[in-house]
Image 1 (tube, helix red, strand yellow):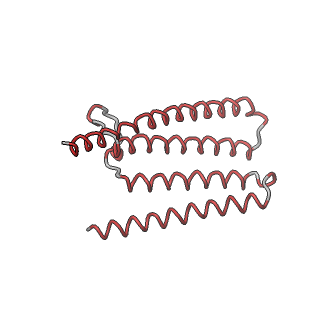
Image 2 (cartoon, rainbow, N blue to C red):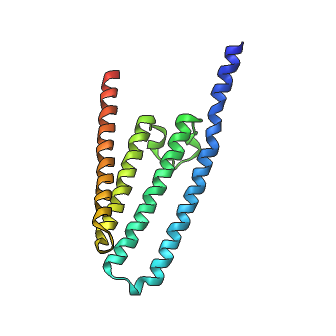
Image 3 (cartoon, rainbow, N blue to C red):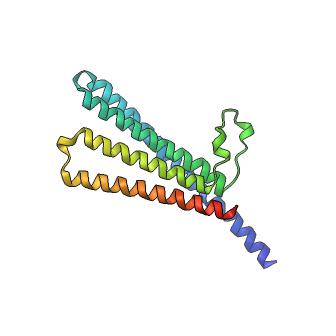
Length: 166
């Protein structure tokens, strides 16, 4: 009896994660405000911007979009993997991948997004190379390469673990 009650409490504790996913929805709203602000400033300054400045603005919006996509991946995949299944039949435009991604796939998608975001930050620094010190560029390249190497090693580890289970 004690064991059954303990298991029921432990299983129910997964719902403690739900507020974390709701907090991520608020983070997504914050990113939306940042995108709207970036677009607003771009429109106001459009006639005074050169090609490089416009490219940097577009890269900033792409960066924010990738962050938003990353948040969506974490919200839906995390909720489905750790809290409760979502009935996708109630949502006709539900992306097919969302109900099929497991924890391993979630981690790989997260790494891919982080690498893409890091790459965009690096590209933005290279686009504005005059205002970035050599030291900062070295750090950005080093951090990006660390993410890339970690992502590749992580994918290989998952692949090896997957083959061992077959």
